[in-house]
Image 1 (cartoon, rainbow, N blue to C red):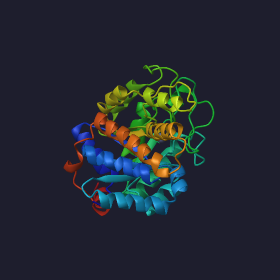
Image 2 (image 1 turned 30 degrees about the vertical axis):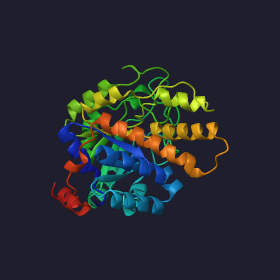
Image 3 (image 1 turned 180 degrees about the vertical axis):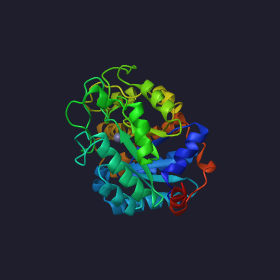
Image 4 (image 1 turned 90 degrees about the vertical axis):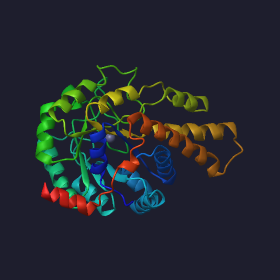
Length: 347
Ligand SMILES: [Zn+2]
């Protein structure tokens, strides 16, 4: 099956009350891990690449790896998504490279660091919706800045993330503004700020409602019952992986992520896309550390990349099952970008 617009997957998830993990990729082994997990669990797939990933792997490599995935798994619907596009230009170049979905993150200015105002956000996001929908490509917007409610700061990921102290208001998406924003822009999905942040160091303790505002999602969902919501920075940062990494020479300070049961609560309130990257990074790093530490005589890349790939596959399959997307791939009918563009033109 050719790559499908992400909107198709989100609509199916909403109709059947489940969520979809969106996994970040930078190389072949990560794509292979996701696809094997999806095959094993019969899951629709969202693969995403940040700007950092696109420059690390180069668009041509990435595009052909994704086309290979579509060829090798013809029965699985796959959406390829640009994570945190910083400008309409970035989104346009993603679309030109075969991405079937883009995120225009207008919560920050084009530098990917300075919080932007509401009007700027509406303007750039609307521009991207126009150019993307004309090609059948889905659009995710973001309102509110990702960052910690504990210390008021964002976390840079691949050079993208708010710099400096953010106010409580900036860190929590306002439900009324969300309603206005979705109406004004026509986005397919909305990323919300509720206290999650990128990277491993999300919370200094197991999060409660003070630092992880799941209630805010429920309020936004009440205002926008038909809007697909997106949770960023939603790795769970498993204790077991922290322990393996540290046992084999790593130095990760104790940290907490977003518990899976909180994500499941979000899925009951309109969360359809859940971004998971750190858990996969940790799984691969833990496996590689274990091999290199235990058998220091080894030097064949495959000796540690194979266990690393298996470890990532295990995390992906777990999340696919926990979020409810497992068992749904064969129920989704492919829709071409052209058909999707015609659908948008009629709406
Ligand atoms: Zn993000």
